[in-house]
Image 1: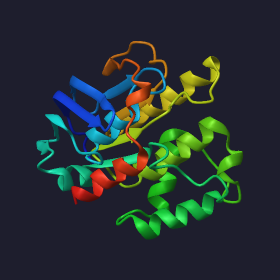
Image 2 (image 1 turned 135 degrees about the horizontal axis):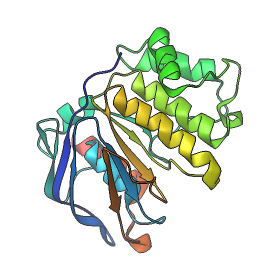
Image 3 (image 1 turned 90 degrees about the vertical axis):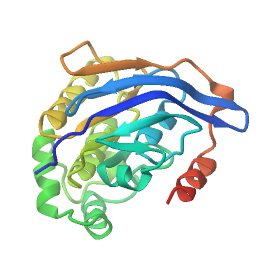
Image 4 (image 1 turned 120 degrees about the vertical axis):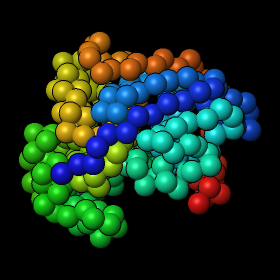
Length: 230
């Protein structure tokens, strides 16, 4: 049900905000169908980097290539290839909506997404949320995997999911990473953000970012940069 994964390559990728660099000089190579785990403390620029790789935040320097398309010049094509499951606060599910409501919303707003496709994604992730459940009642892991399933149903070449381990005790994290591993085995490349990286595994690329808490790019400026690139 998914498209083939795409490779993601960055050379000297940087984003600067009004108070300095958000992240800078990032080099990475993620093979098609691979798993990138960008980890580091809050304020390190993890979310901004993931949005930049997805073509949702304009680079200040360097370049990124996603599936043969180079950023920043081909931002529109990259955005068609990369689905964002979660990158709060810019992209997040509304906790007070019910599962059936977010499913209906995604079918209406994302071309090609169907209820059948979403349910197939549920199977890939081994989840079975009830339609009447509130998103906020699913718990951290359940809400994350629901958001991932909705994005997976878009049939992307790569999928961004941030804050993978947010709110999860250590013993609850392995099943989530295993679910994301099944996602990439099913097709798309997975670009994940987390506080702590998962254990080393085949196909995993781990990238540690240093803390830059005073230099974070405000969400509203990130949105403005995305609008300017459309």
